[in-house]
Length: 81
Ligand SMILES: [Zn+2]
Image (tube, rainbow, N blue to C red; front, side, top):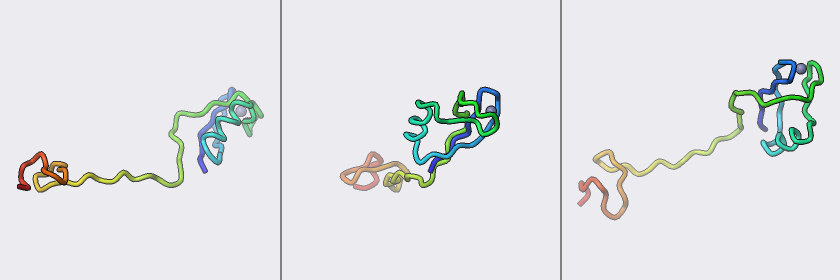
């Protein structure tokens, strides 16, 4: 699930949940999004970054004794042989 901070043409702020950013794009294109306060369909995505469940973690590079990232066959630091 993904939540967006939305704002309508009248200035009402509200949150809207979607299964994915693609679902948001789809509903936005069809003007199927309406403000719960006034029903205005002229809604826009707010400035806040969306909260997404789950996060990808990039693998950390191998750090040699010198503190630099070294390859397995001869590092840049020259401390490994
Ligand atoms: Zn509104």
